[in-house]
Image (cartoon, rainbow, N blue to C red):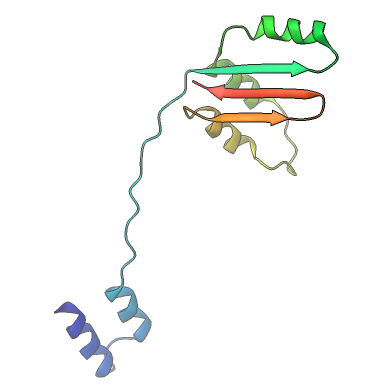
Length: 115
């Protein structure tokens, strides 16, 4: 019924066509979901041809690292502006639970997971 009234207003030149279109076809509101907060970050690094360094890194990252420690160092790091992710986006990505990043290169394998 309201659509007919709006179209009659357009017909009588009381309302602009674009305003009538926006009134009839309102965009649906997107529901905002609350993402779960991460508490720990698990890191696994394997360097090819450097077994001693890999073992040393695995000893330091044997247990998951608390997220607030990683955030502390990320906030104080200097990031170039030509990076793919800005510092704020990276901090937001680290604070969300169940993010999984896996990097496979010729000589390095890195796996980062937020828990």
